[in-house]
Amino acid sequence: MSGHIKQLFKGYLLQLETIVNKVPPELFSVSLTDDMFSLEMNAKIAANFVLRGYYPLLGEEAVLLMSDEVGKAAVVSQIIATRELLETLPEIRCIDDSKVITDKAGFSEIEVCQSDFIHRYIVPNYFFHMGIVYAIAKSNGVAVSKGDFDGLHSYPADFSFVSS
Image (cartoon, rainbow, N blue to C red):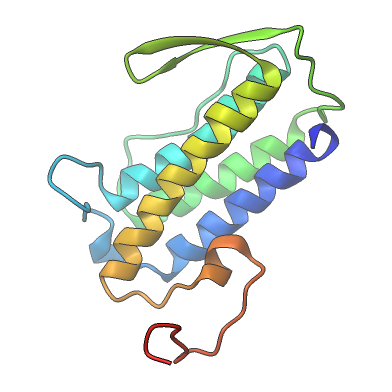
């Protein structure tokens, strides 16, 4: 995976953008429950996880692009800016598990090797937040599908495994 991290992360951002672009502006403030972040904040956090993951592999402190601007345009702008910034960064040729990365996971301080940092921390957290974006959109009637999530699946617009 190491030689393809940038491409993988750019693909993740494209799928997030695909979903976000389908969401009507009025849903960006919606949360799954009262104690969870809104769709907007989850999308911004997901985009930031790409940079939180990539920069430490370069041995650099992460540059985060989350702004105080709100709304759909702000989210789309952050996703695009994140993808553009990622494009300017050097390729990561290999993961070096002799290097330890320290970060904060909630209230926990973590110290993990590079591969664990990507596979056990960055990728799951990215997909957690992207999944919340998807769940809020889907539960509010937005026509999103598994194909929007992964960029691979394809289903007819009216298809359902449940009602088939």
